[in-house]
Amino acid sequence: MSAAPGSGRDQESYVVGVDFGTLSGRAVVVRVRDGAELGAAEYVYPHGVIDEALPGGGPRLPPEWALQVPSDYTGVLRSAVPQALAASGVPADRVIGVGTDFTSCTMIPVTADGTPLCELPQFAQRPHAYVKLWKHHSAQPQADRINALAAERAEPWLERYGGRVSSEGQFAKGLQLLEEDPELYARTEHWVEAADWIVWQLCGRYVRSACAAGYKGLLQDGSHPSAEFLAALDPGFRGFVADKVDHPAGALGARAGGLTARAAAWTGLPEGIAVCVGNIDAHATVPATGAAGAGRMVLIMGTSACHMVSSPGLRPVPGMSGVVDGGIVPGLWGYEAGQSGVGDIFGWFVRTAVPESYAQEARRLGRTLHEHLTVLGAAQGVGEHGLVALDWHSGNRSVLVDHELSGTVVGLTLATRPEDVYRALLEATAFGTRRIIESFEEAGVPVTGITLAGGLLENTFLTQLYADVTRRPLSLIRSSRGPALGSAMHAAVAAGAMPDIHAAAAAMGGTRRTVHEPDPARSAAYDRLYAEYCLLHDYFGRGANDVMHRLRELRRAAVTARARSAADRAAPLPSQP
Image 1 (tube, rainbow, N blue to C red):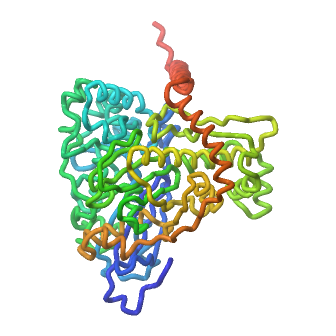
Image 2: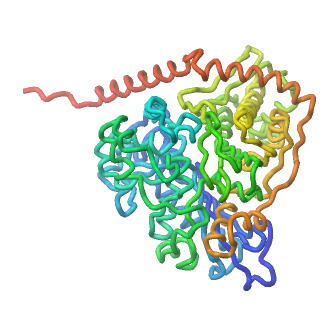
Image 3: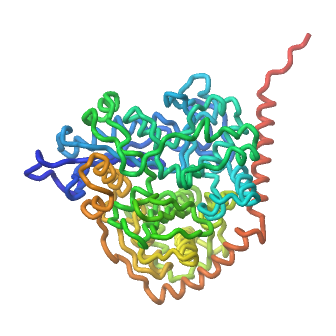
């Protein structure tokens, strides 16, 4: 908690922001006047990320699947929100609004009243009935077909997504649902972004977020891809927009409705207070930094990374995730790019590739394994490990937009140590960020400054490394709960306590300016490593060598064959006459 309610608390107004992340949800109670965060709480999803088998011993999942259980999300409302309110000491009747943000694109197939299909007993063992998390990447073949057809037909909307839509998006995942489980597709009455579903649970009204619809749902200039385009992908997909997707949308900061009695009982908040239209987590973070204007990039570093920048003009940026008019703040074009793996990559390495002797030493020194490997890696000079890595362990979101790509490390020898690889992975994510920044600027979208946000800011070696690699001074967001704070700020707008998000950003957001300056000597050394990264980036990522795609296909074939073999062994023998 950063502050306590003041002596005039009974005259103050407060808002609640709720950030639904990949592994947990976080709630924060915020004073409208100055953005002071007075109480916070976290709820860890009991089911986490489902990427191996369905709950209750259900069927095993194929590679690149990532599902979740929607009741974990309502658990955040029942647990984290009342805990944050209690910790704040703020009287509930002084809370005037609640805002939410979500990982995106995270999709839920639901009935007409919003019931997730996985909550219907007859579908509990059907994988496609569950939430498809943002990092569900098994729809890449569908995304490839969407991209090929859109390019062949010169669809004008494709340029707004950097020339390639992602397998993370609504349409690729929807096409996968149709083709792999047509019965569930037919039973899906709304194909809903989780950002919109949670607002539905709060206010009882389904209001589609114009932000999520623009970046993840191919809604541009008021239109989706045509029914003719969809039918050319699959005749059964013709009605996807009209039957399952299209719905009235609300702008960021708009009021979606009032808190229902049911949601008030869950949260401990007053019935009828403003519920804000849903937002994407990265987009909500931008005003929390106070950066509501053009040119300053907000880089959110967590399990993945998002690179957000606004500009007064519209320009095509190859490989960007999307550009939407007013998609981040009103009056500016909001550009988004990103990396599908950052913290996830570091976590994978620590979880799978570090010997027990390192864990024992870390415990002796009172460090986490991440801290221990960082300290050991930081003792090296730039390039001392002799390695360069590609940060594609979860595919490439930008600028290649290809989730069939995979991570690699070049330069391994018998002398390579865990800290060498760990540092190379840290560097790879920084190189990926530099490639994205250069892509923006090459396309005429200037990046005049960078503010870092997200859960990785505590690693000061990593943040300094980003300054050295990008050759740019870096500022840090003031809040440790950027998305939740940004959602609370939008709630203040929805409740009428702030005239717009620009005013909310000025009053409630904040940044610690120029915390990291690039070191010229290290930057020069990193330039040489970055040049090698770019060579590998283009060699493996732009078609010169498709080995990563071939390996993915071989893996899928092997997993499928093994599953069939196991099913054959488990099948009962035919009865003998």
